[in-house]
Image (cartoon, rainbow, N blue to C red; front, side, top):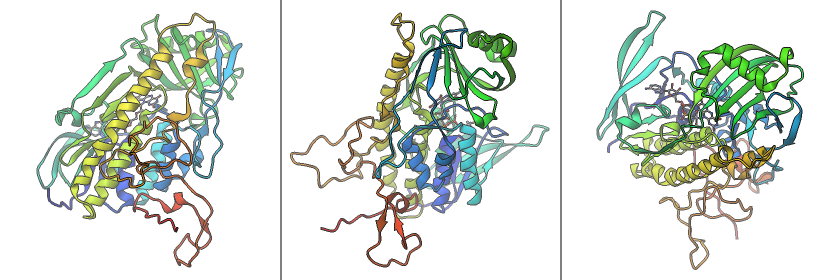
Length: 473
Ligand SMILES: Cc1cc2nc3c(=O)[nH]c(=O)nc-3n(C[C@H](O)[C@H](O)[C@H](O)COP(=O)(O)OP(=O)(O)OC[C@H]3O[C@@H](n4cnc5c(N)ncnc54)[C@H](O)[C@@H]3O)c2cc1C
């Protein structure tokens, strides 16, 4: 393939698309990002942000994502129709930060807030999401990608076509996107027909409902409603999720009265509970599927376009961000002529095994959550408790073709360990996550900004360069 100086085209402005665009823009690679919707999307969706994702946004110089995210609240379980707590528990153990792991806990931030923060950084770099612009087809050759898009103009619904030439195309167009299909990538897996979820954002008047807890009413294997307070939607804002094995919830989002009555019935506060506004609703049927490869030629898929899975474990958005960061820094190096194009093949080589493992792991969590019944009055805690390997800190690329480990103990131990394995502080192999190390002091005057006082590894690492670390004997 030969060099092309046209911009990189990113399709879709969800978490994958904006992360890819920000990584490219930080690297001074010209980028256009298009989004078919005419307005930025609403809805909390995947709100659990994992430590490894905070690290990516640290390297992308978007610290507000960690600063503004809020702690995961303890869960309070109730019987259907009663506010009396059956039990209160934490979904996951709190982990103290360490010098090596400064972001040590999952936190919550709704997708609209996260996306808005990233868009602000993009805007400062001169890149704006082109709303109302839909990819309809594309072709590619040795030199470039040619994409046909339709642009929505004004309120009268006028549409105009544009042909865009792009050096590369990152397709972050979500689970229902067209790119994966047009590239003829497979998307094998299963659909959990019975585990239909209805979710949404609402405003409530309900003084008795304590905003210090994530409330769950009902039983996971029958009928359930969760209510999580979130100030992102206002002081009376809540995110709800409902599932049912006894009632067909399909279509409920189109019947606001029935939806509100169902929530009222589960909470059981009678006239002391009012749904003031249904702000956003959606339906979700868990699919567990992934592609057979993450790209063809100059076109790559990222995020939900490449894999979909259960929301159990909160890995969806987080895996999408990792995909996007992985392909975008590689495209930046190739685009600028610093690396051969073979680097781009490592995107599939690195992400495919991680995603396959994540799919297996989240599917297991999903089964524990939804399947079977112990018959116990309360068995929510074992269904919802998470080990902290969901933090993705064990995610590694030990088996990547660009990783060489000359210090591997002999006889050579198997190189790969699971991405969701235990993180052992003090054990570090080539391809692992590089730990932070604070309070580093320069022993020679480097005369570089940020090196006058102490610094930390995480401020030396970044999305625009590689760091060579030489350990003095
Ligand atoms: C209703 C719902 C609930 C969810 N709940 C959870 C959860 O609780 N936990 C969790 O971890 N994950 C959850 N997820 C998944 C999580 O939201 C996704 O993993 C994450 O949004 C993936 O980001 P993405 O950028 O890859 O795709 P998306 O967020 O789907 O973004 C894709 C974007 O591409 C745009 N697009 C599509 N086609 C085109 C085109 N032809 N041209 C231009 N633009 C296009 C779309 O409009 C969209 O904005 C949920 C998803 C949904 C839909």
